Length: 363
Image (cartoon, rainbow, N blue to C red; front, side, top):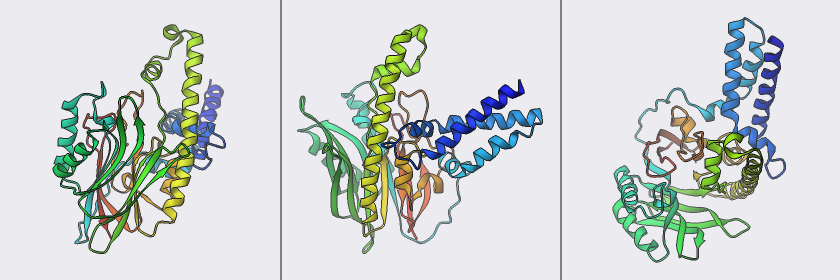
């Protein structure tokens, strides 16, 4: 029995090590590592259970999983924060920013829930943030500008930049990335993929009289799961779906994951090159559609600070949709010239994402 447990333990240790590799190997070269990276929290939990088990059985094997877990200390830090760091208030200038995927400004049940739209706008208004980044801003093509103007007035953010990243021709609908600011925007632009679909907009914002910061508002490639995919993952048993159907749907889900992993890797590299050429301090935020153990996150976070690590607590889950497991796929990364005072993730249920609200301090 001990030998069987040890063999299973070794398999989980191997899988955990492969999850560490996911941050360094691009999925467009070898995508299978990305699957292990996606599973990191569960692989870490399994190894933690084995540590406890070997302690109970008084076996030296306890060090196997323990060493494997501590080897990935950086992954632990970006996954969970046990104690919120205490920040000393200073006279330095600071601003509050909000990052939020609006889920098309609609409820999870449909696109025409105007009551939910009013609730989202009211929530944004109550936060009184200086800079607001929105993804999946959705409206009719004819009403898009009016809705933006209403937001600018209600949020007291006279400056803005937006660009479509997806357009539905019939009926004419607009999906856009939107950045709203209380401070002047002196430069702006859009980054597009090979299919001309925008995955990022950037705005150069004059935060103080002479300090300009470039804000990147990101929405990396989605997995494009449909309702039947979510339903299948919630009940994957052959008894319910049939063995053949399970195989076919599993292949389809894996294909969608593979394609999304690879597209995000390309987008992350292109965005990283743009960041490296930026003459200003940067803030990179948005819906990465990827976890902190992923290649895309690791590539973008290079030389930047994760506000969750410096000012968050707990697991910081930001996705509240139909997947059977919660995850942190929305991120705020800041230049090392800044300090993150506090990160809040209100559990409001206007969207399939939770918003992030951060206080950023200029050192």
